[in-house]
Image 1 (spheres, rainbow, N blue to C red):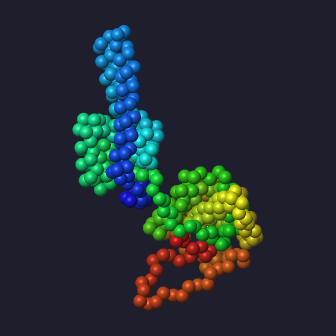
Image 2: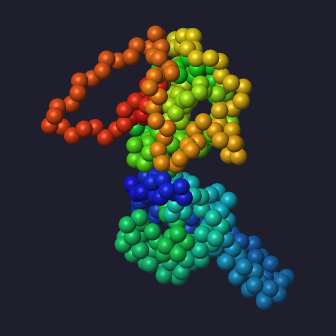
Image 3: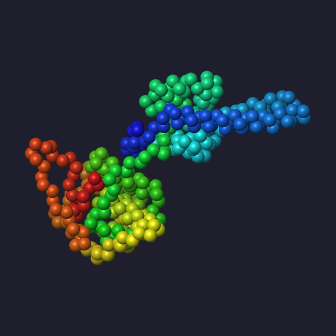
Length: 334
């Protein structure tokens, strides 16, 4: 595993591709290139009796450049970092910040590959991969890329728990238009929530909640913090997925909560307007989230009993660093 810092200053763990898997992917790509090159040469050789010798030489050179350089560049550009060998082994080339590979980077890697693999038999790539902490060859160093593995086990942490105050509201959500990318971004934000500063917690949460609210309806009750809104949406989405799978498997379907909502009906206006208008998650001062209200606006639901408070830790143990419940009794993600 290796840490990648995205353009939004978020540290993301990625699984760096190991040398054996990269070597196997390279052998597949070389085999495809050699078969393509020999097949094209055979076709061109059949025209040797009818074409000029200089023209045939130019065609051979163009085919060689197209196969050796154009093959990795075209495939990695169109497939966002995957050649045929990498696709078979579950590998992908990404930028150092985790963004998809660009054409300029694919071109640098393709030109460097001619020198590393076809001219020097792969010796520079092997030495560079063994020395580099992230297994980079010379083409990756020049292009600013890294090869990652996409088939490793994904660790999402503990499952998200539905906030009891939002259970009835979440049962009425329309989630069919929610893109998978926004849901994955929200889950990653909730996983890294405790690693962020309070200002970044609120700012990123408000931005992700604003994007999600454009695809989810109805809007949440007033005063719901961003992390509680995202947690409720993802938990309800997971509950519906499990219910659908259970229904397809013939198991009894878990009924949705039908407890009446203890708050007024949602407003018609989206709670997260565009950036030109302030939304409820936008702070007037970018230092910390708004202070908690003296009274919880959303008391616990009768159908969802509140667990008994745990005993205070002994005096010898250091105090817990995780923040406590916020306004409305919403507990931050674990």
